[in-house]
Amino acid sequence: MRGTDIHQETLFSTISPGDRVSKDHPLSSIREMVNTALKHLDHDFDALYAKQGRDSIPPEKLLRAQLLIALYSIRSERLLIEQLDYNLLFR
Image 1 (cartoon, rainbow, N blue to C red):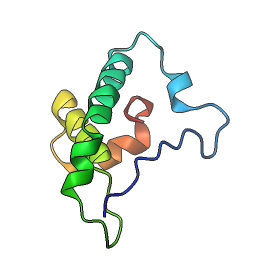
Image 2 (image 1 turned 30 degrees about the vertical axis):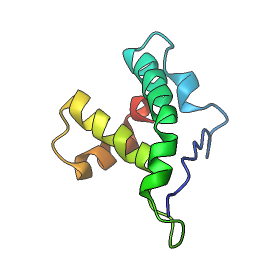
Image 3 (image 1 turned 180 degrees about the horizontal axis):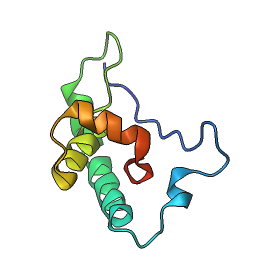
Image 4 (image 1 turned 90 degrees about the horizontal axis):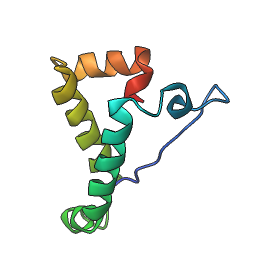
């Protein structure tokens, strides 16, 4: 079963990570393009996943993570997770 792509803007802060990063940063425009492309693939993702069972990690999140790995030459998924803790740009 396909998990939902939930965007949690704030957890322990009243300012979202998107507000902390400047609007003219290249990742901001890349994120908009990626979100638009993934929205067009939504129907295709639904067709690939079973209707029953446990929720999976949303494919949108996995594809965004792989894009960050490619853009920033991060060596492994473990290092990506470490970078997510420190780098507000990746959130």
